[in-house]
Amino acid sequence: MDKKQIIAAFTKKAPQPKVIPCYDKAVWHDVTKLDLPPSCSFTPGGMFMAWAVTNNLLSKDFADEGEEDIDAYLNDQLSAGSLYRWLHGYLHPTMFKEECNSFLQAYYGVHSNNKAEEISPYWSDLKSAMEAEGSIYQIADSTSNMQIVSQILDSRFEEFKKRHKEAEYKPSEITWAKLSTDKPLAFNSSEWLEAEYKKLHKYDDVIQLPLTEDEFYFSHGSLFIEDKNYKPSGKEWSTADYQKGYVSEPGYAQLSFISAIGIAKLKIVNGKYHPKGEYQAAIAVPFDVSDSGQVEASSVATERIMFAISPGAYKLIFAQYMLEEDTRLGDILVADLFFEPVDTALTESETLIAHESFS
Image (cartoon, rainbow, N blue to C red; front, side, top):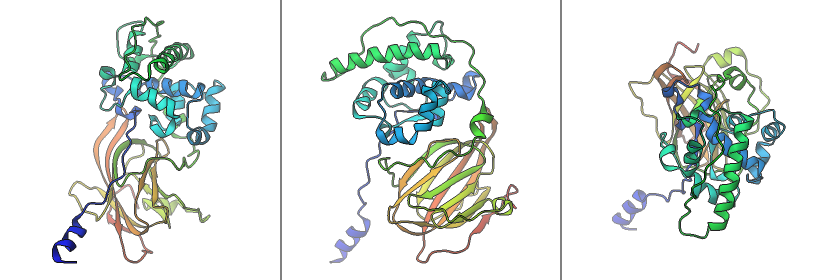
């Protein structure tokens, strides 16, 4: 190879896998601006999820993963909004069968930044069915409202199936039964956030990302990083271990946030750690990625984030700082996670920036 060919080979960007966006996430809807409890952000999306559950429109893998919570909903032990919280609080194509995805794309759309009411026929239907003027987030998460929303969705789905071959699906004008906008119940954060981490939430067809940037609710002050093929060693960690701000073993790390509960704006980077003046805490732990090349990031109270990364040994650096304290959703943190490749697997962890929360 000549010099130009060598330069071209090293500078050519590798093809990136297609990123499939979520249709919606509860975290995208900041209901605190409306002086409503955080639980209200789960009701609209939760009613669609609950309807899909009742009509057997979930993908097999996702239905198997959420079997316990789905059974609880079907047995009237969970409301639609509560079901949505336990099933990660978002709507993603991997969760649904093909026919439901086609319906979602045409009727629900892909939303972000609180713009759903402006662009979605689904949200427009909810708005027209409200008893009084106000925000859609004021719809009560009740059985009677779920019945009305189910009638709306049943009608729209049948209409869609009859007209799905048309170039554009335009819902017809229909007058719906009225939804109740009773004062919503306060968010039972203790029940949701203090529950044990129920399961590892894994299935194979989840979209993989080369690196990702997302935000999600966290609780118990912990971020879990886990290789797909990780098998617990059975080691029991002591209180002193956790007080350091991290515990880890090959293919697994539990990393501590500098706050107990809130929203983390998490960025995952495949590359070298670059210190920032804003960082208030930073730690580095050994991490091994297996031949699967698939890693999961999660917290007790949230959806998981799956991403793809080359197999090998890494120094995993977790750096963070406080962005905003004591909001209605808890503290807001910025957290950066760096997978820094190393030639030889590390055996020791280190504190890069000490914080008073950790000993």
